[in-house]
Image 1 (tube, rainbow, N blue to C red):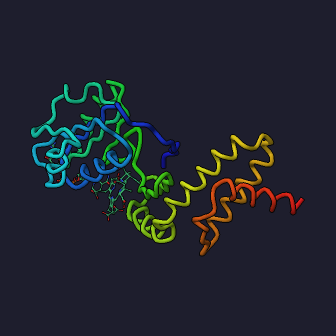
Image 2: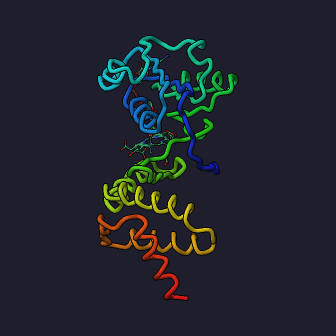
Image 3: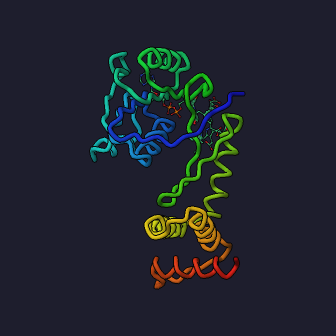
Length: 216
Ligand SMILES: C[C@@]1(CC(=O)O)c2cc3[nH]c(cc4nc(cc5[nH]c(cc(n2)[C@H]1CCC(=O)O)[C@@](C)(CC(=O)O)[C@@H]5CCC(=O)O)C(CC(=O)O)=C4CCC(=O)O)c(CCC(=O)O)c3CC(=O)O
Ligand SMILES: NC(=O)C1=CN([C@@H]2O[C@H](COP(=O)(O)OP(=O)(O)OC[C@H]3O[C@@H](n4cnc5c(N)ncnc54)[C@H](O)[C@@H]3O)[C@@H](O)[C@H]2O)C=CC1
């Protein structure tokens, strides 16, 4: 068992190299695109149709042959996702020697990082992992959570962002800001909660402020 640290990483302008072009590589590439990576190179002799389509539309670069070490230079993230344990091991060792962070598809814990299952609702991101114990459970829990945290969370999070930005400008007392923002999150995330789309952010802030004052 390995302990992992979780973090959110900006990948814009960082080279991400995926070696392998099968179903696993394809899933990693989709995750990279969703995560904002804009410099993705896939290297493999056999490539899925979806990866070909992504290359044709300019989303990724494709090198259709077996990888050579030069392909791994300058990689920030490196995915060893071929169907050969030996090849994946060599990719991981060489990538590490060049300073890349490596993900290994067939022996997860031999790499630097593993990929969680991810649900995105606008700026809300829910990540699930079992640390390699059971990817099947990870995938199952993701589906359950996706049902619970539906598409509506996108607008909800956006509205909370706008309120928070407004409150940070309008209210100087940090303690009051915290109380108000916690209350706002509770209000929107309550089961079955609906919000009045016509209420402006400023009116919302005032209403929460008055409610907080009444409670004091
Ligand atoms: C360690 C890790 C390394 C990494 O890939 O980063 C890893 C490793 C391995 N996966 C294997 C198998 C499966 N992987 C999946 C699915 C996913 N695997 C993902 C991540 C991870 N997989 C990392 C751990 C994350 C964690 O534990 O939480 C997900 C979450 C994200 C993603 O792929 O991006 C994605 C779901 C995405 C989604 O649902 O959205 C399924 C499910 C299915 O296909 O239905 C199966 C079959 C069922 C099973 O085995 O449980 C095997 C054995 C291969 C073999 O048998 O040969 C290995 C090798 C090993 O065990 O080391
Ligand atoms: N981490 C995960 O989530 C999972 C990992 N796996 C593991 O990942 C491996 C890959 O799975 P799939 O994508 O389904 O396999 P696949 O057989 O569909 O694809 C393998 C790919 O590796 C490429 N390849 C082989 N040798 C290469 C080389 N020297 N240079 C460049 N590319 C090379 C092939 O051309 C092909 O595109 C499996 O063998 C399995 O061990 C399997 C399921 C889930």
